[in-house]
Image (cartoon, rainbow, N blue to C red; front, side, top):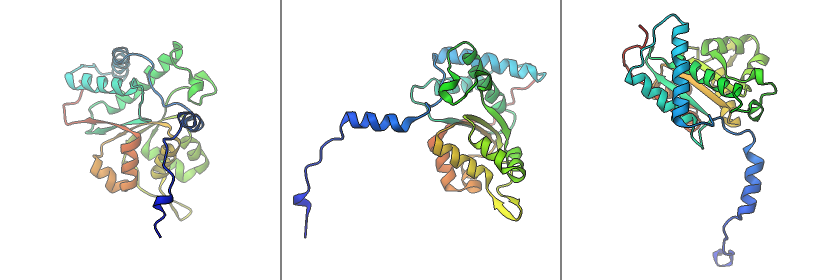
Length: 234
């Protein structure tokens, strides 16, 4: 029997109900720089230069480097950002340096009062900023101290450097763990700000972590591709 003729005419969902539901689901806002693209570009570039010099190198701002800084400034000042970034590409093109420059810019903006750390889940202003971990280091922590690894997964802001260098699985008392997969799933589910650097391309990411995690990356992270250009280090 066809009941379609008894189906009531569907009405649009009420705006008041949508606002109510939205307010109950949004929670912590997605992280962004509350300044103009040009201001973000200048600040990230200044901290990028400082990071290179801190390591004992002379920074040369070629077109390639400036383009990546501008791209990141656009992403992080967007009114509707994703909840993280992934820098993918060859070794020696400044991915990790840019990661540190983003963190320094965020801390500077918090110090100047432009960013409220408590809005992003921090109890104390002094704790604000990304916690940095190498992917190999995370795998080792997961193996030796799972409780600590769980606390890292829950950090409000997290930087994971050299994704792909770690073993896919680690053994804990004979049990196989997939710590990076667990970390990505957790941060995806809770929409926590995450920045990742990797030498893997999208195909290699899918092969190592599976199609599900590759799909998570596409949804949660803005992708910045670093090509084969000459290293910035002189």
